[in-house]
Length: 177
Image (cartoon, rainbow, N blue to C red; front, side, top):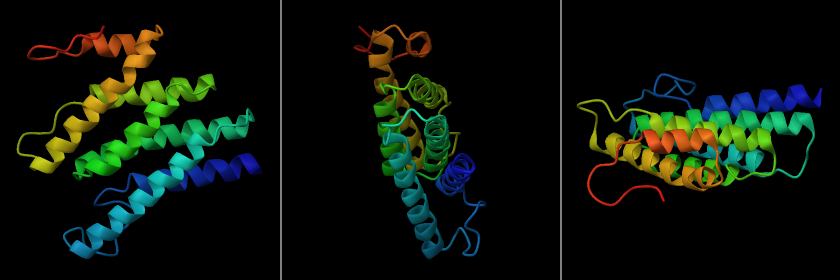
């Protein structure tokens, strides 16, 4: 019963964290400033709750590990949702949490975090005509994920290495050492 409860809680937080304009919080129109603030507040709360789930890693219980992996996956979706709405701070917070988890003692959590960071790092750029804040949030999340993958690549993680070597870096200066 505890396992089902933890899984349901993580799914509910995931839905709230990734609620897009047409998502869970529909009572106020998306164009309403009040609706937008309410939606962002719920998303931010959900991201913090997911952070608590994923960073509270002192148990090897399968239900706890499963809930933590689910929270990592939800944070990855929350980053996509936050960047799509120009939520720079929320996306940076979620990437930071995933970065911490990428060196977690539990292999399942660590693997899920590296996979989530790889997904964020390989997402495309903002679509043409996207608002400036959306493009900035997407670029910042991309580079934060790239940076977070470096320690895993240095320890020989194949997925992190593949992502880092696949990224084209313009200008001078940025080859991973």
